[in-house]
Image 1 (cartoon, rainbow, N blue to C red):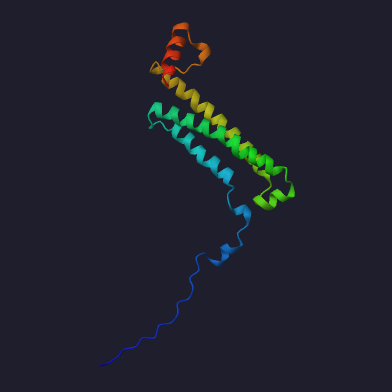
Image 2 (cartoon, rainbow, N blue to C red):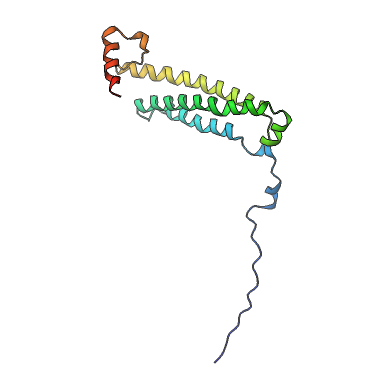
Length: 154
């Protein structure tokens, strides 16, 4: 009986990342708060898209607004607490909290202006279909009673 032997050499360990990426500067990594704002901006894009049904577009604005409220309650509040740590905060985050807060402020101002523009356009389109968004102070007595009764069951 013939025995065939193969010489199998040990494989070289594969590099998962090229060596050039082992020295990534922290500034090359997008801050998670700014990344989250970019994600939320996608909701504005959907609300702006005329191919999206009108009532869906207003829902996207509602989600955007709700997300932004939560963002400030949680993430911005946390950043402000971290900012109080001073130099220690930069070590923890990799970025100065005040720099991140400045970027957030700049981005949010831009998004809020865009939100208002989109909202005004959607309100105009809704009005063309006899759909109006009003606040509770604009309800007449009969409408207010209807709303109270309607939501009493929820």
